[in-house]
Length: 168
Image 1: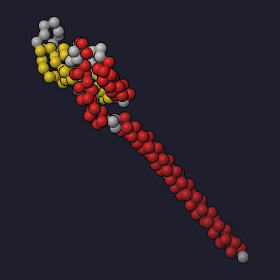
Image 2 (image 1 turned 60 degrees about the horizontal axis):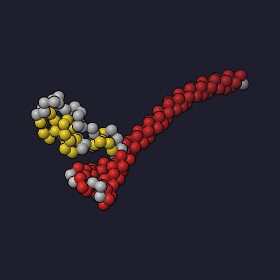
Image 3 (image 1 turned 30 degrees about the horizontal axis):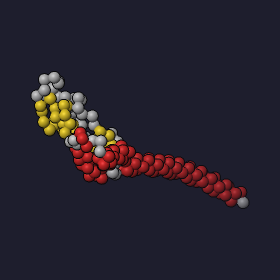
Image 4 (image 1 turned 30 degrees about the vertical axis):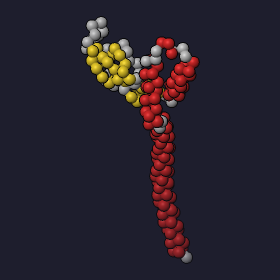
């Protein structure tokens, strides 16, 4: 009977050793799986954050196409106001029509549109487009002396360069 007990004890010891090895393997796998899950979760959270930023950026510039189509209307209002005879500037009907121009400007401002400063500024190829170079003695070369068409930025980005005349 002692022999059977020794064999049973040896079997138990082997089973305990096997169980310890299996437990170590399971703990190792658990750690690997947990680390992998944590990395995947962090990747997903980063992806979500990046997508939200990308969508916000798209929404910010979604109206650009419409604004570019409406800008010529504002340009025409400005040309009409610039060429308006002095005797009509105080006419209430003309003032009413020019109020539409003001409403358009307010709408564009609310959309993040801002005018590019031109006259008296140094020519900047990132913001200005030269239409003509003019000889002018009292100006430094490369100074904008006249604005032909207004330029605009939207939310800090160039929407349309200003068309300008520059001194030689």
